[in-house]
Length: 257
Image (cartoon, rainbow, N blue to C red):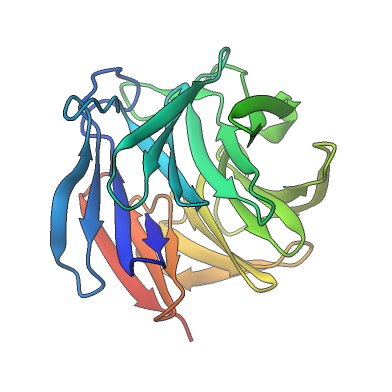
């Protein structure tokens, strides 16, 4: 889930099938802030020269929409949705979330797992964080100490990460070293992450909730009773937290107080 502030709309990634399948049937939907689906398949795999298998996280940088898609980051024109290239990253398993920094660099996490038939996460040990600059990707850090990194966000402290394999959020410094590792009890199996000032919001499948807290501090349930909450977004114009539910095909919006 991504808020496109320049065009005042919500962009939603749709895997549309098995999250590991290279089936070229993924798509990106456009929603209006009042909850209407204005274009269900604005960007659609297999149409208009688009390749898109199982899109997950996304980010906007310099008029380009970057989308994580299994082992490739795909780029699209933010106005038209037309393809603007792709960056394959060899040795990856599941490129999961994308974050853009103010200097134009784009970061993408490799979660290092596949999803088994029962929904369990099966480790592949390719856990890594990559940075894209001038159209090329390089590893910032590759280590299983990242514990299946999933959601990422740019904050005033730099790049912040949450893990699916441990109830933990942390930041990565410019050398890729973990800093300020913080436990997110009461929940683990973390997924989406956004930064709001000095606070973080992170989704937990284990807690069925959106959690709120700070690096080096404690976390608490901010939005309870969330079924399979995935990669959240934030509507900066209306102050809304946007929560997609990956297994029940819905999107909710909440105003935090």
